[in-house]
Length: 201
Image: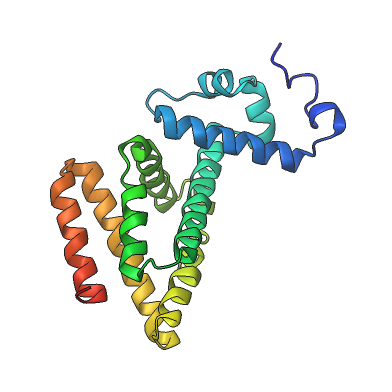
């Protein structure tokens, strides 16, 4: 018996379903970041994070729904990183973008990025389990990105347009990297985008 099987409503009643669900998602994100998504099954994932596959079904309903939550949690972590980078003293807007890009393209996180595009594809094909990922896919990023643009002197309308352009460019280059593996070419394209976007430093 896995250690959580005896307490499907939480460990000894001290952890709510919502808390335990969040803990399992965090553990799953860490596992995907470290090991990728090749041959990922609920049974293997459960064994890796210390629960049975039955418990994962209890909390998430299906593998697809768990994968959606992994993507959502990964996106939240990335937005948290962006906020921390913006708070670093002395780091220019281009420096923030460059540091975030370095984090997003860390080879160890390729599995998360691949999963992101896979789930988006399922959502765009109307797979009901994946459709929720489209909620906030753009809007959740526009607020912090536009706020940074306003802080740098842009008017709100321009800030949102620039934020959307930046988000689309980063995601496009991430897809390019996954498809081609051309790290040098993609990094060079990002540097050119930063030069055009922020001007010479």
